[in-house]
Structures are given as C-alpha cells and as structure tokens.
Image 1 (tube, rainbow, N blue to C red):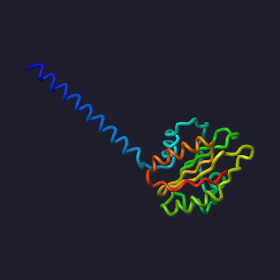
Image 2 (cartoon, one colour):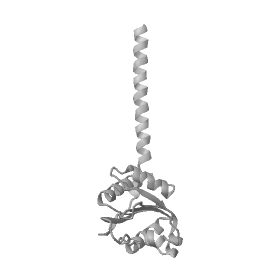
Image 3 (cartoon, one colour):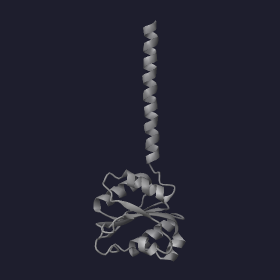
Image 4 (spheres, rainbow, N blue to C red):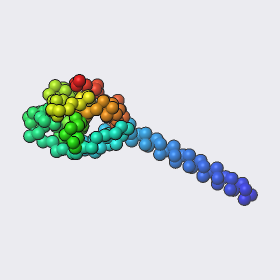
Length: 177
C-alpha cells in the first residue's frame, strides 16, 4: 500500500511539474509576441537587451522641439505636432556613428507621416568624420524605431522590433546608404 501511495504521489508531482512548466512557457510566449506598448525609453531598452550583437556604449539623450532636427530630422513644429514622447540613445564617443530612437506618436496615421518625414530629413552625415553603415525607420501602430548604426546592429534591432511588434510592424524603410 505504501508503494502505491508513493507511486501515485510521484506521478502526480511529475504531472504538476510538467503542467507548471507548460503554463510558464505559454505566458512567456504571449509576453514576447506583439508587446509594443509603454514608454519609449522602456521599449528602447528592451529592444537593445534583445539584440544578440555587441552594442556600442551609449548615452541617453533628451529630445525636445529645440533639438529634434539634429536627433530625428524633424522641425520643432513637426516634433510638437506628431510626437508624444521619444527616447534616444547615441554613441557616447563621437567617433562612432550610432543613434537609436523609439518614438511614440498620437496614432498610427501620425506614425506613418512621421516615418516619411524622418526618412526624408534625417541627416546620416551628421557625425561628419564617420557615417553609419545603415539608417532605417520602421513603424508599428503608433510607434517608430529609428536607427543609424552598424549593419549587424541594424539587423538585430529590426529583428527585436519585429518580435515586439508582431504582425503590426510596417515595412522597414532603409534610407541610407
């Protein structure tokens, strides 16, 4: 009788263990799929963490209507009209052409308009002595990802953004080179 109770307890314990593991994996998958919401700084940090390439040392930059042209290629009026909030990380050393930004717009239409404006007006030669290997902008709902960086970092960021945005991701617009 003791052997039967111990066997049943063991089978029940193993069954519960598998059920618990199965539920944890399912909830983790649901969290990773189409989870693009919140503050741009949080999204930007999670995108960078999700990249499997070595990133350059960066510093956070506060973007305002006064400096939006330099960092995003937007006039102060465009920034005020379309942008709710933005997070920018730029290379800590000026000899590296690296800038990544997540921009939150009022709605998807504003993001689509802003995507075109950034692709047209962002200056990939802003670093003067160095240039990025790739510049792109991509949208998902009311969010944009702008990157001017190395090719491997650009690819990793696009993948991380696609994972976060799911089927809501628009077309990647590469505007440099």
